[in-house]
Amino acid sequence: MRTLCLALMSNLLVASALASNALTAQIIDPIRDQPGKNGPPNVVLILADDLGFSDIASYGSEINTPSLSALAELGVSFTNYHTAANCAPARAMLLTGVDAHLAGVPNIPEMLAPEQQQTAHYQGVLGRNVVTVATLLEDAGYHTYMAGKWHLGTDAGLLPSERGFERTVALADSGADNWEQRPYIPIYKTAHWFADGEVYQLPEDFYSSRFLVDKTIEFIDSNAEDGRPFFAYLPFQAVHIPVQAPQTFIDPYMDVYGDGWTAIRQQRYQRAVALGVVPSGIDLVDMKTTGAWSALNEERQRYEAKRMAVYAGMVEAMDHHIGRLVRHLKAQGLFENTLFIFTSDNGAEASGPSDPDNFATQRQLSSLGYNSEYETLGLKGSYNSISPSFASAAVSPLADYKFYAGEGGMRVPMIVAGASLPRQGVLSDAFSFVTDITPTILSLTGVNAPGKRYAGRPVEPMIGKNLAPLLRGDVDRIYSENDAVGYELAGNAALFQGDYKIVLNRRPLGDARWRLFDIKRDPGETRDLSREMPERLQTMLSAYQRYTVDNKVLPIPPGYGYMKQLVLNTVRGELREPLLITLITLLILAPFYVYFWLRER
Image (cartoon, rainbow, N blue to C red):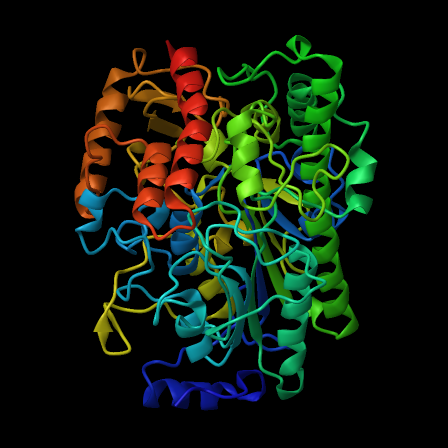
């Protein structure tokens, strides 16, 4: 029997419930180590999609994000926080505190090779051997809500309604249109939305960021009278492709990006230094995938600038609706006892075509019912994205992007905020990782982590660390100099230890060589220390090998490429006009692969 109305129970009753039911966890005040006067805190976990390191104002952006800036003033902003470089693995670790490989999500299912899918933990869906933070909180008496992108499984037993969330409206796919129920790539026949486990039809006036906040408010209000705390998970579609926004949010940025991506990358770096987000004096290098703005004619520059204006508008629209949620909680008297965590699932997406007007791209868009016309770019019926060149500004001053193990793919903003937190408006450059989020939420709510078994089945232990001591200011770092945190995605790999990181990126963007960086002093990964510090390199390589064994990391099949595998998996799927779509997709992806390959050579 689950504990009811924990906020109103005495310490004696909570202790009694614990003794009688092993699934029920005691809730205590994590900051003061005694029962809070307002009861257990509410928690709002906000996840942006494909948001770059410097895409919000408090991290150096020119984009107006006042709601997130206000939250940053109420807590700790982490400047050395890392996540997976792809969405589903990041979400699996975020919600469980377990490495993505053991959690069953080493990569998104759309990019897994058939050879890997023969193994049980390489299915790309959340395994039954892990427990979500929502399950743990629900069993401790919390209401649990989710509105947004799930991407951890679609079939029976895999939807969020069966993984601890009491009320849900969820997009099961990797992405979808933001204006209507439409798929964004031909691998999907439709956009798969579910509400409380049932197939769901979106409303006619749908815009993703507004709709998801509306549903979150609706869920919170539905149980507001019973006094129980809530956990609300709000994973936005912003700024995943297709990049779309209302015109009122696009208009303020129409004259912002006319100087091009290199200028924005430099300006963001300077602001990040001034804010203390990154150290001064670091090298800022152009990435090999960044083109020359001056090589574009005036018309093309105008078009590229608008692509980025729509991107900025989508970020600001997300921030605006976060502000609506905050204001609602204040109006309901819930804000003072609510903790907020904001972050991104991975770094910026850089796969937008450098030439969106080419024949293959236009055929692809028309087959899905989209256009890319300048006047309506970002609006309903329009398909927009940013190219690798403007993505280099989104991750400034870092290198690499989504899918790759460079800092630009893995280091993202992370803000933990709340009126009750003892430290506010501060930065922390302590290393932290996505698996730390669930243990931290459990600590902040006083809910126990599971043991070796939960609900009658064996479960994987959490590997993440509790960040509450950093929030209190008791320590400067959570991970010791000897703690090692490994990572692998589609053959791209990294290991963090102390202030150092070893990283390997495969072709076409990388060269499949291990490199060593001091990412605290050199977050842009501009100075390879492998020759200067060979012993450290070897020590960390040995630690990485242990990581692959402990987490059952499978090798990449010969000839594997994540984009190529996406195409092959599309061919194998049940698609509309499969041959035509396959040929068009191949035509679209081939120029990207050739471009990256030639740049490397």
